[in-house]
Image 1 (cartoon, rainbow, N blue to C red):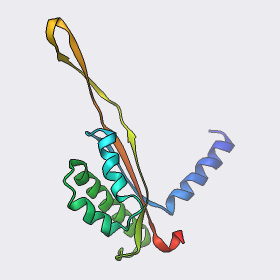
Image 2 (image 1 turned 30 degrees about the vertical axis):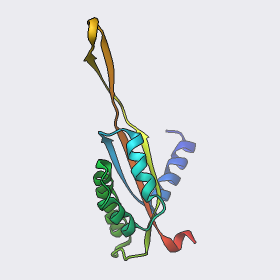
Image 3 (image 1 turned 120 degrees about the vertical axis):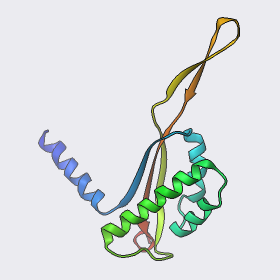
Length: 133
């Protein structure tokens, strides 16, 4: 690795030490469905977001609730204190596409219809509210 790349990588590692995040990879639901749920909690205080996810009737909400709890636990681990109500918020949440499983479904007259089973990756970053102001 060259010097320039190493310096850049070291800067990125240093910046990541200060943020608490959690990733969920290869979730077997389409990114579009997951983004609908992610949009509901973007920018919200974490305990309010957990309440929204708990009472949402979408299947993606259960996976996202577990991920937000993990991000809170990561923040508590890094800062060595418990998260209080009104202290943390979801600063960034994004959903990316993951590899698709391509399948064939039999169709009339010897044809085959293509089925794409989509999946996604979700990343949640939590931050303290007073950091943002």
